[in-house]
Image (cartoon, rainbow, N blue to C red; front, side, top):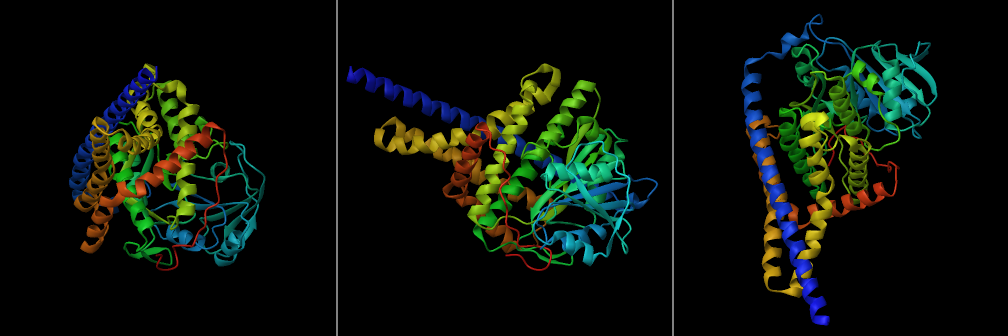
Length: 477
């Protein structure tokens, strides 16, 4: 009897091992496909950009005016530099709306004093429900700068409040600790302008500001942080944006535009119901809901990603806050997918339901669970010996392909196309660190994401406080 149970256990372990290997092989093939698609798309856009003059889009009669909404919670350290950066962007007609979401620091006082804000009476169209607004302020020196002071309700609530006050047909959601490159808006708005409103949302790239020299809201020198945790996030962002989103955007499969930098049609967002206030993944959930609305209305609309317009943002520089961020991101991913689970494998929603959503469910959401099981299988294999050792080695090689080699591929795409990092030493350092990802960084993020998935299933909704050091006033290490 004991022998039979032992044989059944070994057979179960063997089947489990083969499942992990087939799964990881499929992930490697899918990431390889995304890399090829991204490479072709980046080269195509590079040729187009070399012939185009973005100055032509500075004609106010040709472009679309934009409301820039900046939700701010305890952003005292970085808000001035971020607002200065926005006020100096190269775009003909825009307004900046800073929404203070019940900050406990001096965010409101800092903005009011620095930009000479005066309280005004303004008609607010309550198209979306929000927490109570305590006051609206307008700058004396910058008439297109507004400050909304409201009770705390979360980032989604702050964005909805900004939408209610905004004056223009397009809006941009932007984090309070972000700094934009001067031509970023011209580039991210280009697909919307050229498409004659076929494109209803456009997202740009997010890069890590830690290590850059930033003064008065302007990036004066692009550099790489000395902190290994930050360097690994630089690589991770390159992989997520230059490989994942370019490949998905090419066929209108995109389900996320980063809340740190994205432009949307206000009409479509309001029709969709605005930002959902009871989720920590409000940026992705909105995009999925917009894709659903497009299919339900049978409209020929698109949501795109543009790699060149860059927004620089502060990244966590210690494991405590990085843990909170990755945990929250995975909870947000689960929320977004679960809320719209009826779209999964539903032919009514075309390639979104049949390709994009299965990818996010199987690879993005379940991936960390399978990978964690793979790590446990590797440990178990050393006790079982034989064929299990060989399978463990195969799993390790596939992990290297998914982690380290895909990260190296993202660095290659960066240097081949955008070339944001001017120093060769920075590129070499990124290559070197990408080789170590599978050994320490990836297992950590896998554990944090699995933890986030468990907490999401149990219904946890808290945001998790993040500590800001401010990147707008100098060099951030």
